[in-house]
Image (cartoon, rainbow, N blue to C red):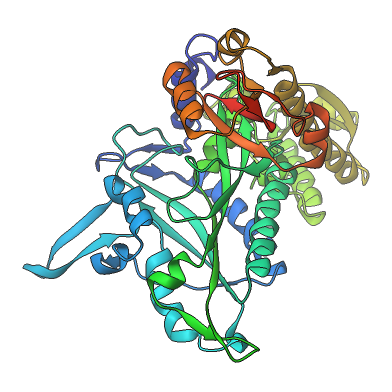
Length: 481
């Protein structure tokens, strides 16, 4: 339980690992660099999948599935792409007891294998757009792994779309990064900054990469989703041309976008505490646990607890009863706090006599006395909504309090140890690389959100904090996962 968890102030990194394992979200695998996602962790992923899948389909996308293995010749067709992924690739050289005629790459990402199919499917503008997503696993050979955040194999979704014009593809890029922003803020209760990556930080093979960046409780940044404008790069690599409305030939315009089980790590680090996991109700498979205090007429108490659970479930609130007797109520309180159940209802013989129950919310640990009548589902719903909003507000306040504007490099070097830093940058890769080398921080995002740009005067020209050269805008720096 909670006493197994190192505190955040003592060792944040160890706190994270302790929490993941103690809350039974994931564990290490006997396969180096891989993880086992346990039922508690996979339940969160299923909730994420369900919400995102619905959002994708509402924007016109459909699901498909493409092979796990990618021929080496496909990977090699896009030079920048293979250069970016080569160090992370796992390669199959033998199969069926024989050496393969052509090596097969275990999917690090699917642009190449998908575009080999799109070439067959697209002949005319009438075949466009193609709006496909796939839920899959990928393999990227990691030397330093951390459960959920960075593992050799992980789960994700990857959207791959094909368009007739650059305007359509750019519209798709922005549509999907905004879907991710909506999901992060409305479901994960995690405020994010949406914007563009620098050229050195963009996806290998992309013209432009857009991202959402979130602040974790140790003030480091975590990239929580990306959307890439691939231009015509992959279409040209696979000679995927189509007949336009004007009866000319043109290469198809492409995008790709994705999020992964890394979001579970983000969720943990954005909200959880030294007692364990804190889950936004929208991503909790079990929103309410009812713990009967089994004294006196135990059967009557247990029966009342079950009737309360049924009342909540009939109103669409996932509730369950822990009526086991092998552990004390106090043990159960701590265990379900560790697992992040948003609301705990305590129900004993005296409560039943008074027709009340005690509801404890996980985010603030505040307890409220509620009547055991038909108003209970509404009251519980209000508390759940309050938890969802409070987690977002709390995370936003934390980000704001740990965001600093600086005008000199000396100020920058002090501030970057404390959180996000907003500063002018001269736009050169040389300056970006020097700052990264000297401070281990990177430019996380060039914000595209109007309110964020206005609040911090992001688009006002100034002087680069490192080079002293003219700078067209400010950017967001941070140390990151």
